[in-house]
Length: 367
Image (cartoon, rainbow, N blue to C red; front, side):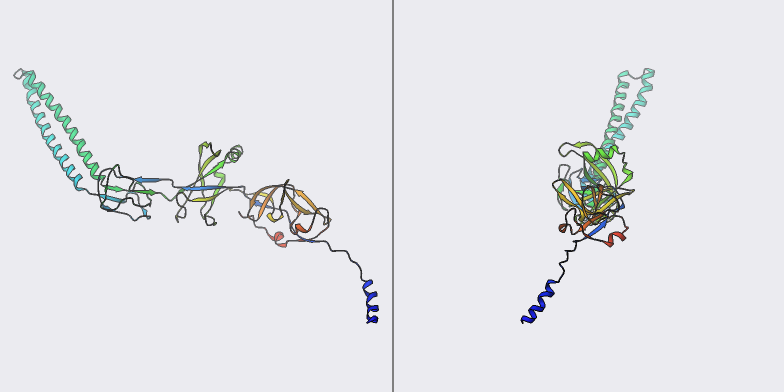
């Protein structure tokens, strides 16, 4: 054993004490992509048209012509009230009109006989004055009875309650057999669902910036993120912006119009709103994993031409999926550390391995 130990000792002493290898990091190249300017808001779906249906005459409901929650057409029968009282009222009005017509014909005949007699002096002026008065009263009575007939026809027509627009019918407030009238609660609400509005508040800071830059509503497109996180498959357009600022939030409400053929958008639904420029611009981007935050703001670690780490303060723009726009602090081609930052510090040499997928990727950043 002493021989083995004496032989092993010189071998251990001759082993070289090599220096530790530089830490290995993953870098990617800062690169330019075609990205569209984008602003993100929270919006609420609003029906363009929403009508509460009320009874205009009183009566018992005899029939309901729709299913709750289904689509109804413009002019479709919603409720049928009992007609019999109003049919009787119309018949009475028409009879009174016929009676007034007969009285008018008699008054005209009396006047036509009395006038020439009064002109020849064979009839008194008082008889002529009475004939004129009776004729005027008969004409006034005819107008009153015509108005009564028209009112009776309208009331009879109001027993058929029809939809003023095409849309989705809500819950019916009353059932068949119940008594309703003008003072009753609304019978049902009809909501137009296609197209539909999405309203979202825009802070004054952004609103003023858009106005100063002269951005038109035609130059942007509006996209929606649904509550389940998926993107809505129809793009929208800006319809208008409110003329008043909300004093409580200092925002201006903007409305966008969206097609809604599949009825995925529902009145009062909360959605994410992305307003993007139609024409993308070339911007410098890096992966969000490269960004480090401290009390002074954001910075990245860059590997220089001598493979040494350098700290760079950066001014960042909007996020684009896994990437983020860099407005200041980097230039195209800079090697930015995206993995292994915790193993290094500024000034030390590193073994930088370029992430090959970032070199070969040419697709624009997706929102």
